[in-house]
Image (cartoon, rainbow, N blue to C red; front, side):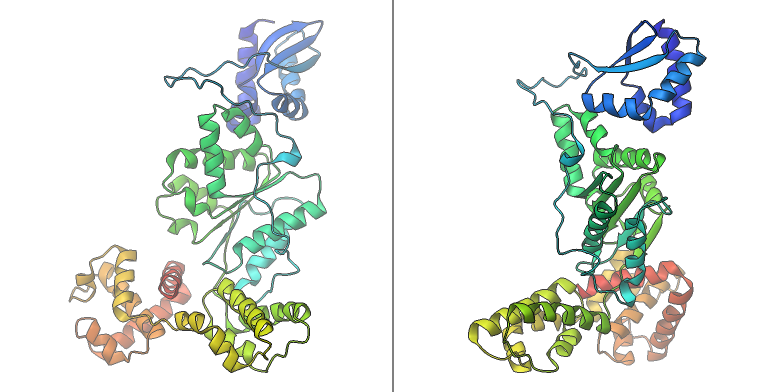
Length: 451
């Protein structure tokens, strides 16, 4: 069979398997011979030989026969020498050789055994995220791709990611599940570029059944890494594989992230883990306290302590859990009952930090930065919408996050009357229910100010 015949077949395969699959699995194939009805192809690695044989052999053979090639079977053999790509960079003295990656050797991050669905406390702020994560972990047809979880620090994103991985592996041990942080993805990518092992990198990341990338905001601004992430994302979606992504903010709010990636991330289910409310924080504390009581047997625990902590530490679940752990350890070491007095003594620094006061000036500065307007315009007389709406958002946040009265807030906004502040607050309250962008802006700014 002539190579121009294989060239025509490749063009047909491009249309048949899609651009991403073609670039990853068909383009690297080299037809070496057709002998006794067997078309023999040279491939760079044994991993690729196994993958192509398992997933594309029948398709390739069908197209060969349609082109009247004398082939009744196809084989894939690893090339004796893989040629190095042409480059102007000096060749390393001894470039490391990467062995084919088997399922048990996926280069992901270790999973925390504590982060399971059984240990995840569900409340109103996180019930949708929990339900979506459960649905993905059950397997079956992919209903939304990707699942994008976002929220502030310590709200449970990583816990849910680990829980999905644990549950998926338990239900379907044969699936290749890869969990890692965006920083680890970037490190692997840079390492593959340096060691000239990009084929192996692509094979690893585009052959998994479930890809989970935590804190994706860290690849923003990294052009080459974003490019590879985009192609990996598309390749897996084309194959019907599940992708789960987490970040500290919604896709559209991640600065320096390419628009095409934002668009891809928004095409699935985007779920916000809201800040915890009092009931959820109390539930988390009660769950943790039961475990600590078993560990520190005989330790006395006064009523009202958990309720006090749930009220006072409201922004971060990790801080809340760490405070409870410190409290139990301290009480055990000094041999005292856990009372409100002991709690305030032991956790004075954490409680003081939680009492940090947000100022009107800080709110004005944050809102100005978010909407890219000058601070002088916010407190000045301009009434154009591009200035007036951010001003109303800042007034609303000042009313919600500070103890200042309406007249005091008005004075800090260029000497405005308290009725103007009241109107701005009411307007933002109305828009939060009808304008999702305003609602997202207010929520994100509130988190940033309370962090």
